[in-house]
Amino acid sequence: MTLYVKIMAHLTATPPARPAPLTGPLVVALVYDGLCTFEFGIAAEIFGLARPEFGSDWYRFQSAAIDDGPLRAHGGLIFSPANGADLIDEADIIVVPGWKGADCAVPRPLAERLRRAHDRGARLVSICSGAFVLAATGLLDGRTAATHWRYAEKLREKHPAIAVDEASLYRLEDRVCTSAGSAAGIDLMLEIIRQDYGVEKANSVARRLVVAAHRNGDQAQFLERPVAKRPGPGIAPLLDTVKSQLAEDWTIGRMAEACHMSPRTFQRRFTQATGLTPGDWLVQERVEAAKSLLSQGQEDMETVAARAGFGSAHALRHHFRKKVGIRPTDYRAQFHGRV
Image (cartoon, rainbow, N blue to C red; front, side, top):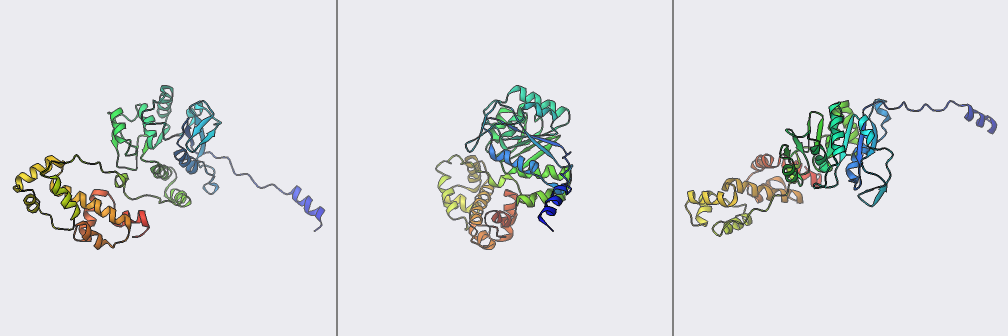
């Protein structure tokens, strides 16, 4: 074939068909000055990435600025959004990717706009501290909402009508969806896809993200245990001794004897000092010790159980799952991929 013929064939060839325009739900992510970049990226990646294999009824994704630009984002970024807050009025799903701060006021026009959107049938979705924006609409009153465990007490204090769930990765209730810490937003978005398009498409998105399609457990496994008030001199030395010797057999009688008290007096004073019964406190400390050993990933399960004071892997699994919400093997796998 001559060069001329090749050129003419190229010029007259039928151009490749363009993919059909998307017709699925319009997802609008709010952007603001001080934008939480990672949280916004979650929404953009899950709802805004081209997925032609899913057909034309997949989500349409846009962002809407609620502040005048140019806007700043975490990481030293400056950006100029193409759309303003009016786009919220057209959205089927509105994502609040974090917020400026737990004590930063939510503009009343924004709260009213979000409430109107919910009234017409839109779903409202928050990631992490974005729960404070949804709380300002009043739509969370009387409902249960999730947020990052670090913000739970502040959300409860500012909005006492909300049942704050600091343990779950996400909550969905009457088209109002809230998620815990930043990465929990991924879990929530995958659940939304699962409800809208089914398990297969949700799993496909998860595989492309290289994340679990559905995580075991909840954010309770990551909570920082608050430091308890230091008990009085009668109990404090015992706590230090027990924590340094968790593998030993600590009965009520032995602990009471170490404090020079009768078992009945000891149990009463122990509970007054720690807020827990001796048995509950001992299990709590042993679970914390097991978590530390599991995160290091060096010991087999029987050794972990023995060193933490549970005696057997069966007892370890029972108490660990009850306190943490997942199996010890799953907890260790999160740190080392070892089961």
